[in-house]
Image (tube, rainbow, N blue to C red; front, side, top):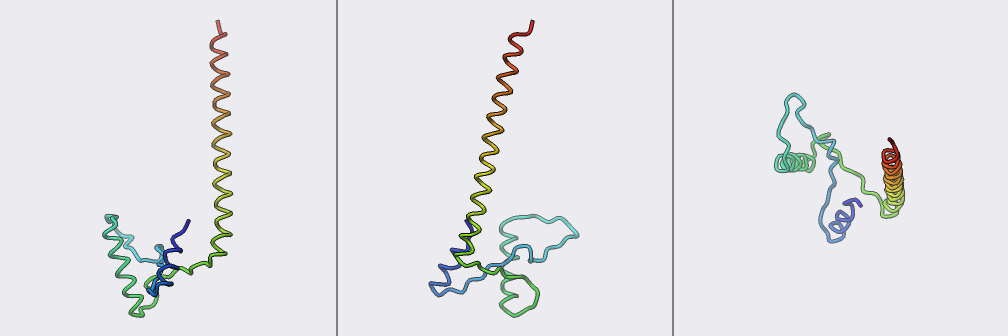
Length: 110
Protein backbone atom coordinates (compact mmCIF):
# COMPACT_ATOMS: atom_id res chain seq x y z
CA UNK A 1 0.00 0.00 0.00
CA UNK A 2 2.61 2.54 1.06
CA UNK A 3 6.12 3.08 -0.23
CA UNK A 4 7.75 2.25 3.08
CA UNK A 5 8.81 -1.15 1.78
CA UNK A 6 11.20 0.62 -0.62
CA UNK A 7 12.78 2.45 2.33
CA UNK A 8 13.21 -0.83 4.21
CA UNK A 9 14.84 -2.55 1.20
CA UNK A 10 17.24 0.37 0.66
CA UNK A 11 18.19 0.44 4.35
CA UNK A 12 18.70 -3.34 4.34
CA UNK A 13 21.01 -3.05 1.33
CA UNK A 14 23.07 -0.41 3.14
CA UNK A 15 21.76 2.73 1.44
CA UNK A 16 20.86 5.83 3.41
CA UNK A 17 17.17 6.54 2.89
CA UNK A 18 14.98 9.42 4.06
CA UNK A 19 11.27 9.96 3.57
CA UNK A 20 10.36 13.64 3.40
CA UNK A 21 6.94 14.87 4.46
CA UNK A 22 5.77 16.69 1.31
CA UNK A 23 3.67 19.16 3.31
CA UNK A 24 6.78 20.38 5.12
CA UNK A 25 8.52 21.74 2.02
CA UNK A 26 8.15 25.51 1.82
CA UNK A 27 6.41 26.97 -1.22
CA UNK A 28 5.67 30.52 -2.26
CA UNK A 29 2.06 31.36 -1.48
CA UNK A 30 2.17 34.83 -3.05
CA UNK A 31 2.02 33.78 -6.64
CA UNK A 32 0.80 30.82 -8.55
CA UNK A 33 3.60 28.76 -9.94
CA UNK A 34 3.82 25.96 -12.41
CA UNK A 35 3.48 22.56 -10.80
CA UNK A 36 5.60 20.02 -12.58
CA UNK A 37 7.51 16.95 -11.46
CA UNK A 38 10.77 18.62 -12.48
CA UNK A 39 10.16 21.71 -10.32
CA UNK A 40 8.86 19.63 -7.41
CA UNK A 41 11.81 17.24 -7.73
CA UNK A 42 14.28 20.11 -7.67
CA UNK A 43 12.62 21.59 -4.57
CA UNK A 44 12.75 18.19 -2.89
CA UNK A 45 16.45 17.75 -3.68
CA UNK A 46 17.23 21.27 -2.38
CA UNK A 47 15.31 20.58 0.83
CA UNK A 48 17.03 17.22 1.31
CA UNK A 49 20.49 18.73 0.77
CA UNK A 50 19.71 21.49 3.28
CA UNK A 51 18.51 18.85 5.76
CA UNK A 52 21.76 16.90 5.31
CA UNK A 53 23.77 20.10 5.88
CA UNK A 54 22.05 20.39 9.24
CA UNK A 55 19.78 23.35 8.54
CA UNK A 56 16.95 23.35 11.07
CA UNK A 57 13.28 23.32 10.07
CA UNK A 58 13.94 23.05 6.33
CA UNK A 59 11.73 19.98 6.06
CA UNK A 60 10.31 17.22 8.21
CA UNK A 61 11.06 13.55 7.88
CA UNK A 62 8.35 10.92 8.13
CA UNK A 63 8.64 8.26 10.81
CA UNK A 64 8.64 4.88 9.11
CA UNK A 65 6.05 2.57 10.67
CA UNK A 66 6.96 -0.98 11.57
CA UNK A 67 5.58 -3.75 9.34
CA UNK A 68 3.14 -4.63 12.15
CA UNK A 69 1.83 -1.04 12.25
CA UNK A 70 1.42 -1.09 8.48
CA UNK A 71 -0.52 -4.36 8.69
CA UNK A 72 -2.92 -2.83 11.23
CA UNK A 73 -3.47 0.18 8.93
CA UNK A 74 -3.95 -2.12 5.95
CA UNK A 75 -6.88 -3.87 7.65
CA UNK A 76 -8.60 -0.55 8.25
CA UNK A 77 -8.01 0.56 4.65
CA UNK A 78 -9.30 -2.71 3.25
CA UNK A 79 -12.44 -2.41 5.39
CA UNK A 80 -13.04 1.12 4.08
CA UNK A 81 -12.57 -0.12 0.51
CA UNK A 82 -15.06 -2.96 1.03
CA UNK A 83 -17.62 -0.63 2.62
CA UNK A 84 -17.33 1.80 -0.31
CA UNK A 85 -17.67 -1.06 -2.78
CA UNK A 86 -20.80 -2.30 -0.99
CA UNK A 87 -22.28 1.22 -1.10
CA UNK A 88 -21.62 1.43 -4.86
CA UNK A 89 -23.33 -1.93 -5.44
CA UNK A 90 -26.36 -1.04 -3.31
CA UNK A 91 -26.74 2.33 -5.04
CA UNK A 92 -26.41 0.72 -8.45
CA UNK A 93 -29.02 -1.94 -7.70
CA UNK A 94 -31.42 0.64 -6.21
CA UNK A 95 -30.98 2.78 -9.32
CA UNK A 96 -31.80 -0.20 -11.51
CA UNK A 97 -34.96 -0.89 -9.49
CA UNK A 98 -36.10 2.73 -9.77
CA UNK A 99 -35.42 2.87 -13.53
CA UNK A 100 -37.34 -0.38 -14.07
CA UNK A 101 -40.28 0.88 -12.00
CA UNK A 102 -40.35 4.17 -13.91
CA UNK A 103 -40.37 2.34 -17.24
CA UNK A 104 -43.28 0.17 -16.13
CA UNK A 105 -45.23 3.21 -14.95
CA UNK A 106 -44.63 5.02 -18.25
CA UNK A 107 -45.66 1.93 -20.22
CA UNK A 108 -48.97 1.62 -18.38
CA UNK A 109 -49.77 5.37 -18.45
CA UNK A 110 -52.51 6.37 -20.92
